Image (cartoon, rainbow, N blue to C red):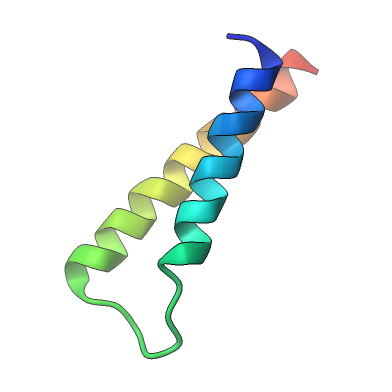
Length: 52
């Protein structure tokens, strides 16, 4: 996968986390969804590091 594509995926995942951030807390469903996003973000970062 091209590095530019990984950068776009990384940015989209980071924006999704930022957009769903709330100081008042999250429902169980929201916590689970944010967990999946964080996991995808970590895996994307690993792919980016492997390509460097």
